[in-house]
Length: 322
Image 1 (cartoon, helix red, strand yellow):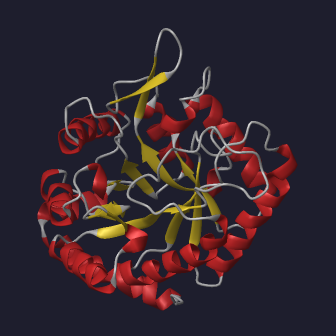
Image 2: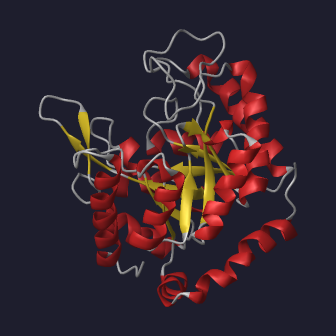
């Protein structure tokens, strides 16, 4: 299913009516980013997630990963239609399809110690051979939800990726070219359990895979899980600014004996104020999307509420009115 430029503009431009509420009009006019939250970081009840995002967080955008204990890629047609009605009800636009694409083993490589015992975020544990069908499904979902972005990864992390890196890069390029035929952006997330984990590794991958519609889902929190890593400014300074197409917001602390733990945004080691200032300086205007992961408040929703408060506080300190 292809998406024409006219169709995308019409779908997104249809949000002109969203500005009817004064608060939403102000946010649209003043916020330099598409401030968002991943829906299932609030609740598996999609209607409730959208209510919290729109009414309590004051957002115009939401990132879709899963609802009703199903991954977004596994919704049936009735569930897709129900989701679209809920989004319209709360006047929310979709930043991207946060898919599990390429969170799988690279064929022929040694077993990865980073592979979880079960699939994450209610996604099916799909094999390498099933990834093409998964990509096609994501492309269809972009049409359904009127977004131009699909999130992906680059396979479970290997102790020595060098023998496989060129082939992995070619697979990413192939997927990007397929997305380009539908006027879509493929967002590669730096993920600590996958082969592109740090900002430095992201810069290397983007240098090797030159398709311009392969962009980075920059996640400083994931990068900070590596000992000694400094996501901002060190890692950020390595990244090609024009190829950052999405940003996930979480925070991280380092444990005294080694390892890390998640923290509420603003409560960890990441200089989010500096990162937001750099985004504004460099003209970044895509999503800034809360992916809490931290559960210190007891529930996903309570924890996301605290993290959203910290996120908005850091945005304000950076001079962004969101």
